[in-house]
Length: 121
Image 1 (cartoon, one colour):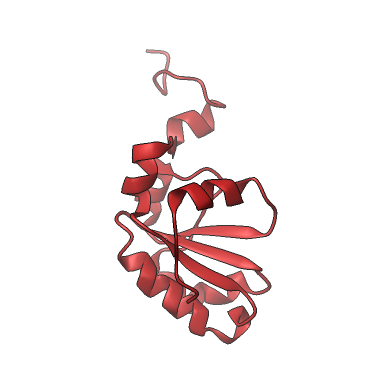
Image 2: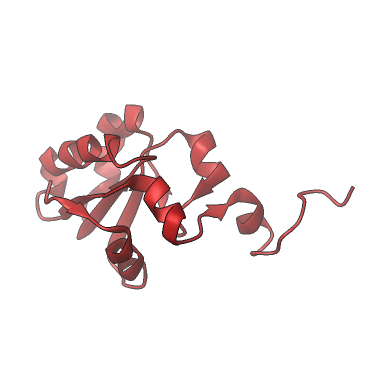
């Protein structure tokens, strides 16, 4: 693990190529709301799926409060396939992100960003 990174720096990274934002929450929570452009690798599945991150240049792990993502970043950083990657945990987690920026929700992702209910009735 290379340390922690602020939500502001993560937002700036989203505009560049080569960063992978790894949300370690369960699939249901991830589908409900997430950082735009992030991918889901639930923490319990991470040891068996870490090879999916092979070849990444930069990896940022995120969780609800920024605690479990530190452990996930350490695990990813210890993986042989990620030795050349910069691996960081986002400080404050999704809670800190939501204080400053919008989270993408299932409703906004499915409707192209439009507000409103999922069904017309």
